[in-house]
Image (cartoon, rainbow, N blue to C red):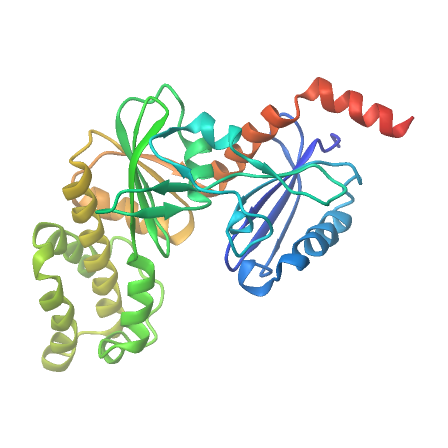
Length: 316
């Protein structure tokens, strides 16, 4: 097995993912846990990280690159937001080095849109953009679905604007804490080609201003026409996703191609939604994109020749 040259860490609010990586970007080992920022104090980050690295057999001098909420004000050490417009290269150059640790640990910054009319922030998604886009990309849009979906406008490697949409969080609140909980029940997985989902995407995209009415119609249709809970669940998802796409297009305009950076169930739902609206997408796996972004950063922090010399000194 190749020797690891760095560890890549995606440290979110609720989840932690760590990979041992070779210099060429090969994953040598992986660990996942629910030890996200929400469960940690500032003093707890190093012990959690070291526990996972020890379990993977990582050398004591192995450097680490981190993205996500570990760099927030409430995290391990703040990596202050980088104000846009900013280049993808700037994300790497503005990383901070964690103080008081035996390892060389770098945390990548998030992005901030310091516009009084449209203030916004992201942390973690910027690394997906770094790994999922290239500096030679033409003007375009990227969509990163999630609890708080992000849309970003980019031009030749520069992020010039972005917006956050509380699509996933709204879905959870409406499905579990509003009157719609009676219509959707426990919900469950549904086929992204589900007719209720697809029709709802189109309806909310073209008539987003009627969203409050369309949402209540879910309850009415269940009462009056005995619509199934799974179809109501699919329709609720479609209404919110279609409304999100409409809002992003209203803000950023149309684009020949949207770079969809997603994985898992959300990837299938958003692919189906874009297809229903006859929009062209370029699919990028979100898990691969975040790792690729961390690899790009690590190669700039620790060039292979420098690191080989460092390991040789430590062994001697």
